[in-house]
Amino acid sequence: MTGIWWTSASIEIFLCSLTAATAHLLMSLGQTLFHRYLGHRGIGGRFFENHLHIHHRHYSGDHVVSENYLNEEANNTPFFLIPVTLVISLGYLVLPLDLLIVQLTTMSISFYVHLYFDKHYHVAGSWLGRFAWFRRKQQLHFLHHRYADCNFAVVDNFWDWLLGSYRGIDADRETRIKVSLPRI
Image (tube, rainbow, N blue to C red; front, side, top):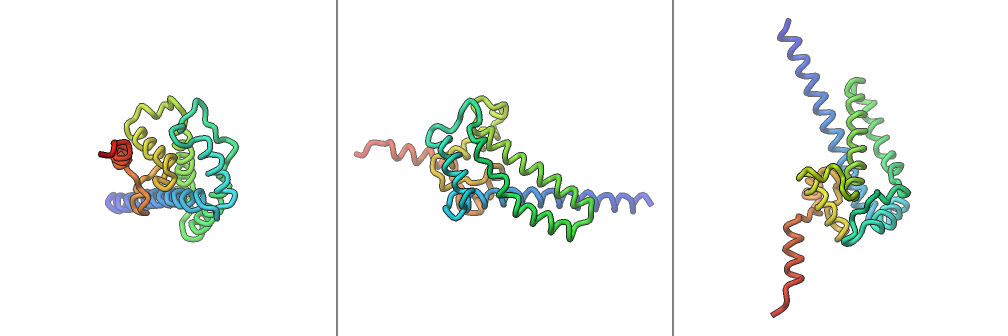
């Protein structure tokens, strides 16, 4: 009897973990694709206007941090509601209630983390700056603000690598050194 319970619990834990991982990865991929294809192209309409003409205006070139986050008026959250609603609806149709709750919870947390990280990338003296992993992600994000054609992912930078839009910190240093070296 204990073996059956253990197997059942193990399967439930596996399914919850798989649902959570899939939900986060879908949110992360969606954020990256929205950012790349709607936030940096005219077809994005209002999303493009908010992102490029407000967010990138506040944080461009070497001015990528401020004492307070300056982007409060350009909220692109409503634009994410359409695909999120679609994913939730599909989950409702195919998932049992417990996994649907895992999906909703994970998607909400993932969305919040994306917003939270982006905000803290741009705030001087963020408490997250004490962590090396955060400083690295922040530097990758700043490359996005410098060049606007790379590093669209806010949390999971492997999406940029898979989509061919990743620019590493070391590659940027090499480019800057080559540009600043005097010609002989």
